[in-house]
Image (cartoon, rainbow, N blue to C red):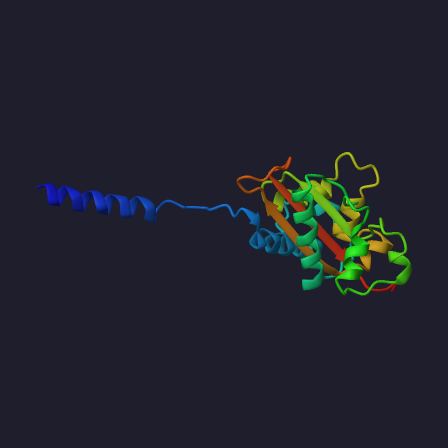
Amino acid sequence: MKKQSFYFFIIFLFLSFSFTEIKCQVQGIDTSEAKEMFDYLQKLRQKEVDKSDPLLKYVGKNSPLLFWNDTLAKVAEARVLDLVKYNYFDHIDKKGRGVNYYIANAGYNLEPEWTENKKDNFFESLQAGAEDANAVIYDLVIDNGVPSKGHRKHLLGLDDWNLKNIDVGIAYYRKADGDRCDYTTYTVIIIARHHWE
């Protein structure tokens, strides 16, 4: 009798776990969220999202396709790790450098005048605290509190400058146990180009 009860208990556990969706949250760099963000942003720019998507109304007429760039992704990862390590949230790091400096030093060629000022950022959007990829994109496109709507223009290519930026690298970081940072998540999105044209 005890043996039979034990088997029923094992079968019950197996069935319980088989029908329960277990979603593990990655701590640290989460490349799957970064990929999901890229895919969603690409579909949004091409108007290939559901018609009920609240961000669709912000998309321009001629947003070009984006191309994943491993160099920019590595810069985005380094930037997001720096934000976490030094617990700040700014386009200029603690050394007084902006993303243009890091992009060029990683081997992604930029126009020389784009790196003259070490603090310059022509290509980076930051977000902190969003639960997942869609929430990051939503927050940056809505761009509350930013009168210029610079993040929206950057992500969707809505002005002459941003329309020509087509290379992208994204990093998403989820706070790990022991991290001493203010936010639970951090995102760096870099959308750039090499030359004026």
